Image (cartoon, rainbow, N blue to C red; front, top):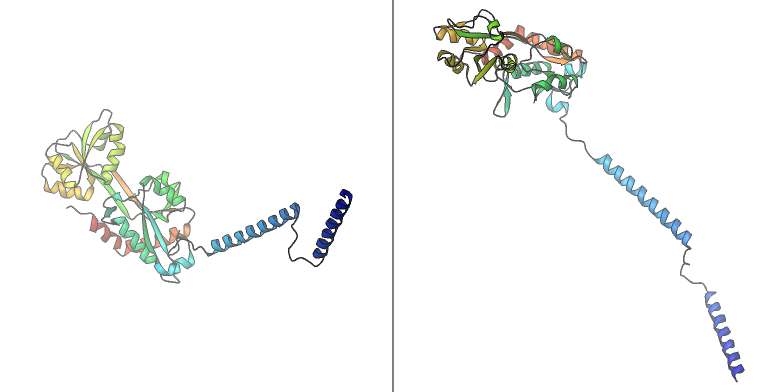
Length: 319
């Protein structure tokens, strides 16, 4: 009996296998599972496709990004401007960039939110002649020459005196102003010449108008050398009053105002020798002779027609 049962069980199992085989032969709609190697290949292909798509999207996004807005020439100067066509040498097309240190009245200083002064107005007149817009960049005085030589700005104007040292780095335009620093003393003063201020052991009190050339020169040449103490006043008249009342030993100030102050205050005199004589000019890059020529020609015309002198007279007076 056991053998018969075992035989029947075997026959039934075989029958089931045959039936399953017959079903498989009809064709299944399911896909066979891929092998591990085939799965890895498919995943790598999918990843590559996705990466390429990402790069293409990134490139498209980069191409569509607009650069930071910069004023087009037509926005700031007339199209077809002759100077731009001939030179094209300003840092920004259609714009003349002037570097300055706006703490040097009356040549350049802040008036509210604007930089004004002799240099600012002369620069504006030059830009107008060249058909360019003027942009003034306020910076440290010691950075102006470097800004010119590095091409950051087109020119430097800051009551800048022409010196041999500076001429090694930049070209200078025609001089547009001469500054003479005079020394006012009381009659009978122990200061009889400029040499007395520079003598060994000198220790004078000097009055100046704050931020003027007189302030700068006396600070550099005397105070920093331990030869004087500088007293700075808001107005030239205040410095002269300090001299009259014996609060300072002398006053260093521009020559023209000095003449008027002496005329109004008996007992004051101007020394025969000047403290300093300065030729002010515009600094431009040695690598840009065409711009130097254009600026210099415009400046010469403004000097010849009296524009420069009118600007100087507007800011330098005896008040």
